[in-house]
Amino acid sequence: MLSNLIRHRLVKDTLILLGVQVSGYILPLVTLPYVTRILGPANFGLTAMGTALVLYFAVVTDFGFAVTGTRQIAIAQGDPDLIARTYSTIMLCKICLLVACFLVMVCLVGAVPSLRAHWPLYFLSFLQVVGFCLSPNWFLQGVQKMRFIAYSDYGAKLVSVILVFALVHKSSDYMMVSALQSGGFLLSALFGLTLVFRSLRIQLVWPALADMRIAMTAGWPVFLSMASMTAMSSTNTMILGHITAPDQVGLLNAAQRLIIAARALTNPVTAAVYPHMSRLASGSRPEAIRFLRKQVLWTTAPFLFVSMGLLFFAPLAVRFLYGPKFVETGVLLRLMSLTPLVHAVSMCFGTYYMLAFGYEKEWSKIITRMMVLNFVCIFALMLLMRPVRAIALTTTLMDIFAGTSCILFYRRTATLVLNTAVITTDNTSG
Image (cartoon, rainbow, N blue to C red; front, side):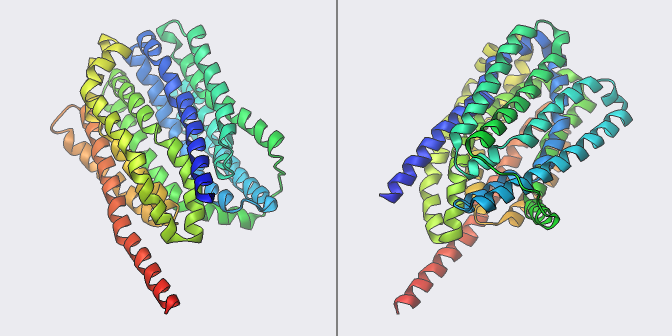
């Protein structure tokens, strides 16, 4: 009876979070054909450059708390005082990091002429960082109040989409696009915070410096991994923007938008399953591994069809969504078509297993190796093909590397866990 209840709850949470992904990634795709046609590849590329820069700061303000904080809150359920202390500690850490990031961005934009030329764009894009910092989604996942995430995301993203159609009418409106897209993240965070304090009655406490230091230390390995991945993807975009024209960045970003939307479909399952896996792993690792094995097929199978669809129908989709100026985007989309499937595999053996079981340092090592290999591949492939295609192909190769590494780690360690459990059971029985 209990297992059936858990299973039903996971299904319900997954469906709710699937709707969140529709609002967060799929819903903005409604505006994408309009925005790309209005702005053109060059100005669309400028908005992508703004997002690429501020994503560095978004990762710093998160500092791995989306993983470690969610796990701590999930384990602390039933202890309101511990939950309040954990939430207050992590939020104060995030706000301190936000202030530091803003000061760094001011200095960076002021010092680099190519950034200074478009400084209003980067300041508007920074609203995304504020939204990511204040967002309580990590906390709501930990307490498994997924519907609150849905409420805040649906409303904010819907407002953002409506305003894009109402206010963006010419190519020079690219800063308005950045403002509306970034503002959507901030509005979603404010909606979420309102729900947290009104409905969940969280009591803020002033955290001790020792608690903040412990939280930062726990988040450090995950932060290194996330920073490596962001440094990889954002730096790839920045490299392309500095060695080619902005329209090449626009062509790549148009393909990445579709890939990100496809990959994001794994997030509802991950967000619903991860807190449950964390609790299972803290109580019975063999039981958690058996649960994981049941989840792998359900998580990965749908993305085989997603990847095959992108591979075969990329040119048609690009022609329909973006128009004739984005023909090259179809080629880039095909080069990255396998990444949704490989990403789903990585979620199973990386997030479900390595992070839920506390293997953050080992996961961080995989991501760090991937970052180094990424730049080696890019510059090697640029000798053989156009820079924009080299970056697209490298994206796929790096996902394959990460997924394979996570599977190999799982095979080495999960077998030991299960064998140890069998031996312990036999000794107990004896």
